[in-house]
Structures are given as structure tokens and as C-alpha cells.
Length: 369
Image 1 (spheres, one colour):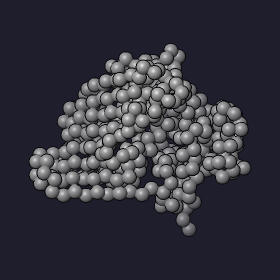
Image 2: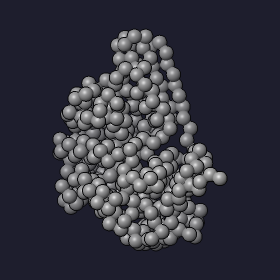
Image 3: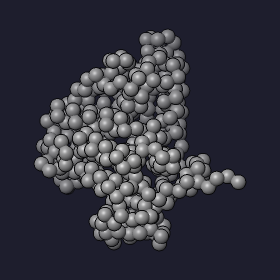
Image 4: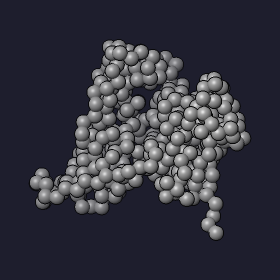
């Protein structure tokens, strides 16, 4: 007889779009993605009012009467039937929400960007380690099968070492016609392109430069950022930043994000002397990628081209959720796939870019500095 799968009991904080996607995927039958060792149940949902939590359960959890609906987040943290908390609030609330969950002895999966700044994240990681609790940033892209396949090709040596990586995530949010309280425009919610969209171009730089075996986990030797602010609210409407890796690799990542236009196609281009990898948008869940092989290094003459497509059951958020369950089952406090050093690198880069671009969050938003 096969062993029973490990079941992780989730409490969900906030009932917005991202929490809806998380719950729909978490409650899918794991067998649909050929997973048999872990499964997920939702035992509590917290919102700012209990009716919102009840409506969420009705709509996204098939009205399961076993799920507690709470009108406060604190009740979720205190629920003895919750093992791990998923935090889907706006990023300027992540520090407070995650800290309270950890203080109540809960493991945490926190949406990106994990916090408003690196100081807040370092404090959370310190607390998680003190309490021997698992903590991970919800960078779901890193766990998708198609992305794993791109990484395999990128690291098998057939293209050589990476030299330049271009990555962009943009979207036209119609900023002239949405309320200034919308998350993308409100500085109190950490609005703008960088904290909202920036984690995605950044994750490609982490996966294909920072994580490359030849880089030996060396951080970028320089970070150069430039910010264009919208006159509507002063948040960044377009941001570009370049990371230079010169300690081990000789490579650069040229990254950009914008809230006023769509992404290009390809939205990620990874350039090697032996060819290119082209990743088609959206880069948070790419549907396909193309590998171009040159006839000889540096020629630019493409002699072979292969395109691969991927299919994902559901939305694709469940792969990271399975990783959380396995890590908790095995007594780990961080994932080896998306480890704490990578989340810290993101926040340190964002801090540097915001400082260079003169984008300061309103007084009181950052709880630690």
C-alpha cells in the first residue's frame, strides 16, 4: 500500500484576485498534475468582514462548510486547524501580516514583493528562523514545468555562458481612467511598476544569471536604476534597471517594467555566444519558448530553431504550493528552489532602484528602514 499524502492545512489572508487564484489551484486534485505525495486543504479564510470571507468560500471553495469564515486576520492566525498562512494582501501590508502569522506559530507563503523594503524582510526571516517556521515568497514562476525546461537547456552548456538577459513585464493599466486609490497608483499600497511588476523581470535574472552554476551564487557587482514617475500620484510608471555580474560570470541583466503599455514579444531574451533563448509573454507564466542555435559562437547566424510549448492544469500556482507542503513535511524552514537569499536579493535591488530613482513611500508605510 502506498503512503498517504501529506496534507497541509491553509489559512488564507485577504479575498482579492490573487487569493482567489491561489485557492482555486490549491483545491485542485493533485493527481491532475501527477502529484501524489502532498495535498492541500483550506481550513480558514480571513477578510476585513465576515460576509466577504463567506462569499469567497462560496465562490472559490465550493461552499465548503468545513472552512471557517473570519472577519479578522487575527482569527485565522489563532486557528489551531491552520498549519500555514497564505498572504494575499497588498505588499505594504505583508510585513505586518506575515509577522503576526509567524508570532502565532504559522508557516508563511507571502505574495511578492514580500515586503516594502529589505529591512522588513530581514526582520521576518530572523523571526521565522527563531521560531523554526517555514517562510517563502510566492514566486510561482520559478516552479512551473516549462520554466524548469528552459533552465535545463540554459545550463546544459550547448549555448555557452549567458552574456545579456533582457526581461520586461508591462501592462496598460489605463492609469488616466482608474481611481487614484487603485493598487497600481496608490503610493500607500506601494503602487507603481517596480514593486508590483518588477519581481517578474527580476526572477528571470535570478534564475538565469544568479542561479547559473558558473555564477557560484555571486550577487550583482552593480545595480543601476532609472525611474519615470507618473504625475498622477508620483509612483513609478516605467522603471528600468541593469544588474551587472562581473565577479564570476561576465553578464548583465537589462530589466524593465511599465504600467502604461503592453509587454513586447519575446518578453525575455537570454543571449549567449552560441545562440538565444526567446521567452514568449506573459513572463509570469510563459506559454512557450524558442531556442536559436548559431552555426558557430558569436556568428549570430541561426542554423537551428526549436520552439516548445507547455500546458498547465489550472492556473499554475499549485506548483509552488506543493513545494511549501514538501518543505514543511520535511522540517525545512526555507525552500532550496526559491530560497531566502533570492528574496533578499530582490528587495535589496528594489531598494537601490527606488533610492536612485527618488521614489519614497509615504511616511509610515515602511515599518522598518
